[in-house]
Length: 372
Image (cartoon, rainbow, N blue to C red; front, top):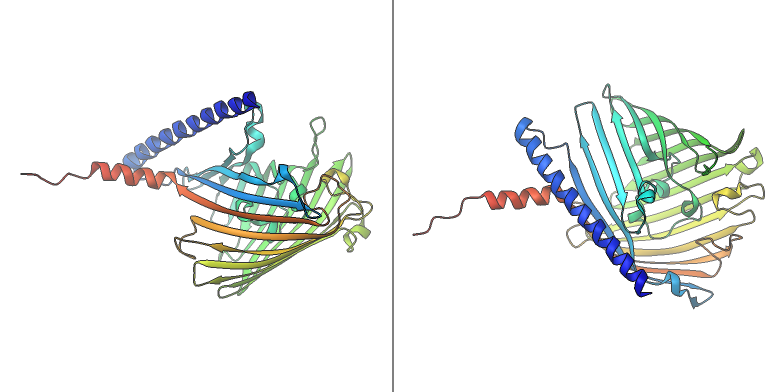
């Protein structure tokens, strides 16, 4: 135990040291570029973290390994505009100690985007797999309990995409080719995705049609329909995901439904109620972690508090959320098991390193008041 702790501490110190070295390098490069050509948008650099106290139980008995104080997320984010037509985006996770060979596995995305015109965008690199729903589209750091589907799909893959956005910016159509989430260490499988997002009045849609290869010549098909309605400070989200290698699976034999209602109170407090339902058809592709015969429901809710302000500043957030599971999960290692409960209480914070460093540097450069 002592040896493992020492190894963890040594690796953690090395990771932290590397982060600070990278921060210093980025700040210097950003300052130099800003002074040379008045461009300060090449590097936008930030860190985000979330810490939770978890209490997870099964049939009333606490699961010790899954409970206690946890570092749920510790992410580094960098993005910027290289030229008017080229931009990049990168997010890296550091909350798990891994060898250098696993570093790429903890890279959520690392993407270069080329925009020849205002309407067209061509991207390549490690990307988000375009299965669209509001649950799937949300940042993991902002989600507390999710569907069994969400917990079992590998949503970051190497690939390329082409997107077209209308002049008004209300609608976007995207076509993506990438690695399949069923890709293995010995066999390369591919995925082909068509995505549409549109905002019209109080309604915003996130729709996709997905084809995931799971065996030579065989594809698992997804039809994902994400719907959101906003009425002032109230928001309603309803997701429907049909999936399956056969047509009968797509006709409500293999699907997930996710619903959430939230309301922002007095700009600082957000309350929400949420439910998820997963049904897995008998012919489901078990490589996804969703085992045939599963029918599981999660019901819960929670509250969020933003001490720095609601709509204007969400860089610091306190949360508490609870969920209970009904039904059967035939995967004994699944994340949502029947008669399981989940409680989380924690804090999330985000900081823009570049802006903070610039403020410090500018403060240091300010002339001192004259003294007699």
